Length: 241
Image 1 (tube, rainbow, N blue to C red):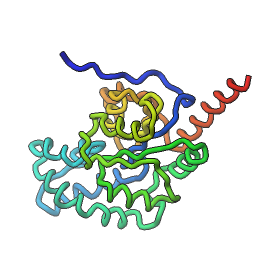
Image 2 (image 1 turned 90 degrees about the vertical axis):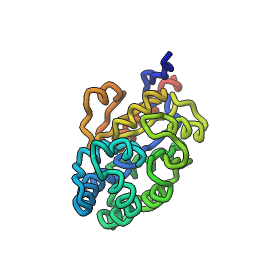
Image 3 (image 1 turned 135 degrees about the vertical axis):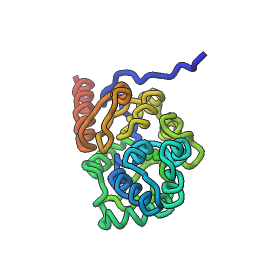
Image 4 (image 1 turned 90 degrees about the horizontal axis):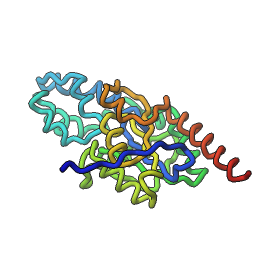
């Protein structure tokens, strides 16, 4: 019998006690870099690696390239032997100034969370060294309560393992941990794990399956801040009556 997966319940900002950030394409504009650089690497190595191959990799870790190798010959080599070891070089070339890779609203939202003592985690399929480098290149100093890398024993999204571990690190139930995602694999992992999730559009155009997994959509991280502010304000007014 197939294991029954938890389904995220309807949610509002008043129930949120912690936030879990994906990183690539959500905190930083690295997906644009990926879409540009990976096909260029393919061409330089004699492979046809179309943007569709890069899109298929978004939201999951490099192990996915092995599964897609038959569909996109050379993908595993170009990703794991060429792109990943040199990723920081490409990142600093495309985003030389601190803050230039920030997605809109990153600084505003993280500053608000810190002011309100709402802990947040970063749960990314990237290596820990890349995560730390990208966080250090943000437009403000960030203070996540915990950082989890998909390279450290977690099954790749859409499996919710990394989100479940982040919620445990934050000391809260999945229903109280807001996941912020930009990828199809990420929003499915959040739903399957029982997490409330807001999808922030980046470069991925959602298909019908992804639309079924999207629980809420907001344009930017700044809109998430406003949504949380309004919900918490309504809760305070209600409790004050």
